[in-house]
Image 1: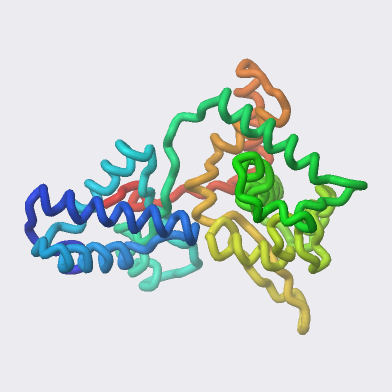
Image 2: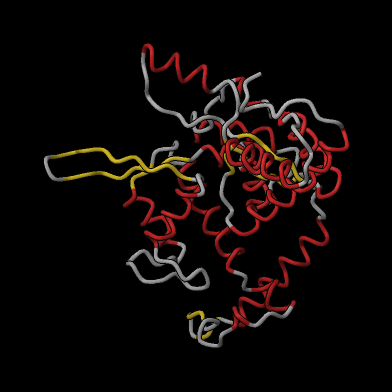
Length: 296
């Protein structure tokens, strides 16, 4: 085992101590930044904790196992590794990448708690009611009323920018997936405009981001990948496809369940629906390497 992957030796108590403080760090990053966490960043933090607590040296892999145990037992979360970024390489470069991809390099925090259907339905109903109260003459007025900065339970359920961002992300991912994971930015704009989302550079209500800023945010969070192709001497075409984080957080099963809910499809109709969806999205969900399926 390499020095980067092991801080050497350690006892179960020391491992648990370091893991507990590393869990706090992971939860803080997930809450404040909503980005992927690199393995090197976790290793550095674990080493800092070990030195500060005078734990000596502990095995990073053992710490990581204990972290996932704590996350699962206490919070219902999982520190899930991401597949490596897909790039077009050949020959020696590809072989080198295959070797480096044998261990996960980035992680995200997944919520594995069972859904509470009745509670979720109640919250969603409250969100809809609160949002509709903020619509006057077809315009959202919550921003003018400083509604988003009023920290009441009623408001938090109704017009949280996180909820709006998730809704926009859901729409965008569905557009990309049902475009066979290859959609032009202009086509994406047209689809979003049909949902009433402004793409003219003005800020989108509630999230207070312009359309380009929204796309850049989802790129940074690795839900989307933007590719630029040259179609002429002075013309670049921007194309979007799903990112590796989408493959983990929003897999095919989640897409099927979403469509079932939106279309009120019964369980008896579900097998046929899944086949239709698979035909329509083609190979949008790429098969990840075996090395991406392990947390070690």
